[in-house]
Length: 446
Ligand SMILES: Nc1ncnc2c1ncn2[C@@H]1O[C@H](COP(=O)(O)OP(=O)(O)OP(=O)(O)O)[C@@H](O)[C@H]1O
Ligand SMILES: [Mg+2]
Image (cartoon, rainbow, N blue to C red):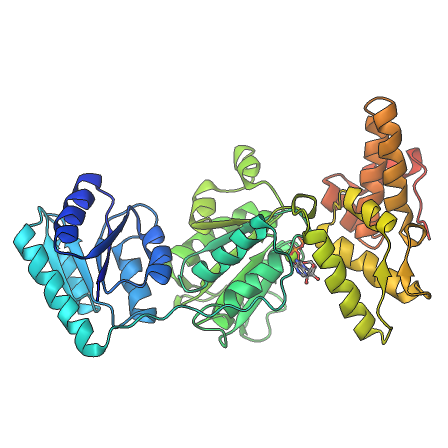
């Protein structure tokens, strides 16, 4: 049986040399140039032996070793070490690495160590475990979403920070929960902190906890989210809204894997997978000094961008069918169909509130539809209105006020006509929103 070897090494010459030597020995060899790619490939390639460098950009050799210790303990990991890092290689061996090879690598020694490691896996019957996949809750088979599912499966098993970005309602929280479900610790805690919804003073204690008497009102000790999520996942939702002055403390907690509750003197070690999400453009926020770049790079070890619904093609039809079926069952309705004209309007509409907006629209329609077929007249005004407006726009010229009016109306509709929330999502003040509502004569339509 052919044996597979994975080489993780950022020096290209070294990678190629080892590949040549091992291919000549009849092994199937794959090479990657950093630890993250290595861990990702590991799960699909199922290597019999892995060789990894220690110092690499993104994930280093110790992160690869930690990954191996959690998921693929039967696969021997050989450390490649440069002059001056032998001590680290010894530390790695104490933590479970099979052996180490000092650079420059001696070809004979390489062949010998790999052969010995292979013989050992044979005795143990080889082994690889890949996380199982179940997409029971996520609908959509467009190529962009297939890539997202693949990323979820891969990153679930890697203890690396993940940043999920995407417009409001694109499913960021759903993806965060799916990553947790597909991790090797699905039964461990999943703790969500909404950084936008908690006032600054409470947020610090929400994240890190506090001791009794730390501030007025702190009558008892309180565990923070990091401690509550220990052993599991901490989901930092709306991370773009984390106040600037709290960012260094978060960075420290993520880097050092330890937290100090407000008012405490001693730090506590924690082991959490961090998933952050935002609909803000963090690059722009960094440019304007509102978000720290060091925290951004730390959280963004692995990025999952979620496309807006309007870029997911036929997913819309799949989602419509899914939600209609679900709401009919939930509301004890017999099944509903949607006519071609109505479907066309749904396709043309840009869905600024994405899947949440689609879900809300369909839930309301199922409540009111009496005759088994959804027609275009039953759709909300904003969707019909958009269609008329765009038809007009095609005939006339580019109409900025009409677009602004439509965007505001969609945001309000999307936020259940809550003006503060709509203003926040639109990035304008509440007064400015009120002024525009008056200007464009926008009021709640039924
Ligand atoms: N692919 C999908 N399949 C089925 N339902 C989905 C999908 N994506 C999102 N949803 C549903 O849409 C709603 C919004 O999703 P979610 O809360 O995860 O979005 P979000 O990106 O976190 O939004 P926000 O930025 O406003 O917080 C939820 O009810 C979720 O279950
Ligand atoms: Mg969300």
